[in-house]
Amino acid sequence: MRRKPLNNKIEKATIAGFILVLLLAAGAYYYVWQSQSYGRTIEGTRALAEIWWKREQLQTQKPAQEEDFYSMSARAGCCVWLENPYWGSQIKINVPKGPGNCYEDPIVRRLVERDYAIVDITEGRCPRR
Image 1 (cartoon, rainbow, N blue to C red):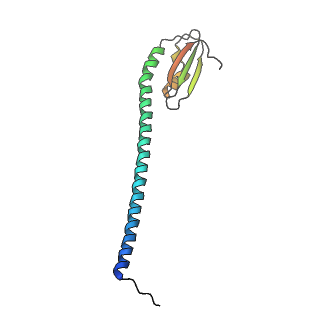
Image 2 (cartoon, rainbow, N blue to C red):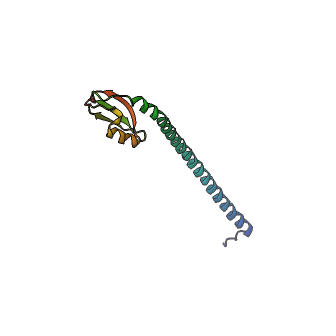
Image 3 (cartoon, rainbow, N blue to C red):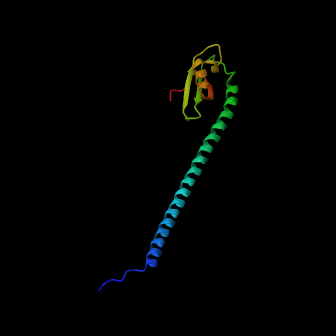
């Protein structure tokens, strides 16, 4: 028995429906993809804003800390603790005995010029640990 050909209108409607379903699926996928990447962008922006805020806080604290340490005398030697606000690393420097101030040591000055902040200055040599 010979098959009867489908009506031309039915074929066109089926193809149009299939294309419509594909377009809806592509649109839904694009929407989900955009909303997910937007969420990641917002989280990244928040994290970056927090980093900038912490950096600003450290920069506003830094001049006050340095002023307090200008008058520390190096008669008995000093232990200067420095911290890099960008990396979070700390360094301790032994300043030898002398007539000047602890802050005037050339190594300490170079590190302060490289954006290290003076965290603490104690009299005497730095502890070994």
